[in-house]
Image (cartoon, rainbow, N blue to C red; front, side, top):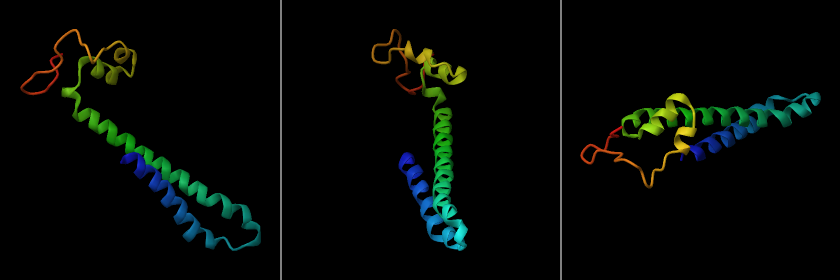
Length: 106
């Protein structure tokens, strides 16, 4: 849903600039400005939505930190994705989670 909201924000920024901002450029020499402004507003809106999506993902991963296996937590701390590449989630070598609480045992 967040990904769709990002695109919707970009479309909303584009439409806002095309409908509200563009009629303010009335001079004859502002031909190219009327073409560029909606795309600039759309790009800024897209980047802001993308930022919100990344903040939401980061906050969700931080809240789930106790429930993630050791390799995933190590990957999040060091930003080194080789820890996750070597981790086999489907056939782990050890018991990953506590059956009562659901928290990680590592």
